[in-house]
Length: 303
Image 1: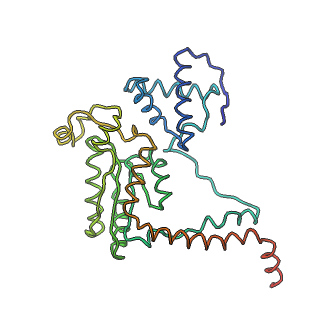
Image 2: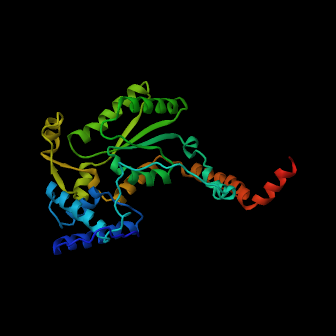
Image 3: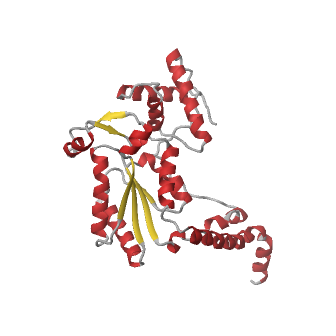
C-alpha cells in the first residue's frame, strides 16, 4: 500500500470527504482483486448517488484523486491507467530461480480439445484488464478493439477464425461495447468483417454487453446519445435519446457475464481430462527445480 506524500496540500472539507469515500470504494474492489480506472471509480460515485453524472464532476473527482495521491492519502497502486505503461525486460541471474515455477510456464491448449473456437473482444482498452481475468481463467484469447477494429487486426482475426473452421470447430466471437450509436454498430461491423476475412466461415457473434436488459437490471448512469454520430438516427429510433457506457457496469458483473457465456461452450468432461494431463506433466517439470543440484552434477559428469 504505497501511500507516499510528495506535497503538503491544504484541502477543504468537501475534497477530504471525496477522498475518504474514494478510498472506501477502492477498498471494496481491492478486496475482490480488482483495480479500478478513474472512469470506473467515477461511475461508482454516480451509481451510488454521490455525485452528478457530468464532465465537471468527472474532472473534480480526478483532481481530488490526484491531490489525494500527492498528499499521501490514496494508494498509488489503487487506480491504474490501462492505456499507458512501460514494458521492461525480464532479467534473472540465478539459474535456480529461472527453474523455480517453471512448470507454470507449461500449458496445454484446452480449446484445441474442445469443439468451439472462442475469442472475446471489448470496445475499450481501459477495460482490457477486466476481461483479462475471466478470459485468463478459461484460456480464451481476448482483445481490446479500441473502437472500430482496424483493417489489419480484422484481417488477422479472420485468418484465425478461418484456420479454426478448417479444423471443423464451431466459431464464436463474444463482444462487449457501449450502448450508444457506435457501440451498438461495432458489434455488427466486427461480425461482417470477420466473416469477410475468414471467407464466410460462419462466425457466430454474441453481444453480451451492454444490452438493454442489463441497463434495466443494473441501472448504469445514463448519458445523452451523441446525435452528431452518423449512426444516431437508427439508434434513436430503436432506443431513444439515452446512451450508457460499458465502464459503468461493475467489474465483477462483467467477469460473471463473460465467464457464464464462455462456459456454455465448454465440454466439461474433456476440460477436466485436459487439466489432469496438464498437472501430471507440470509435476515432472517441477522436479527440475527441486533436483537442480542432481541435474547439474549429472550434466557436469557427462562433459
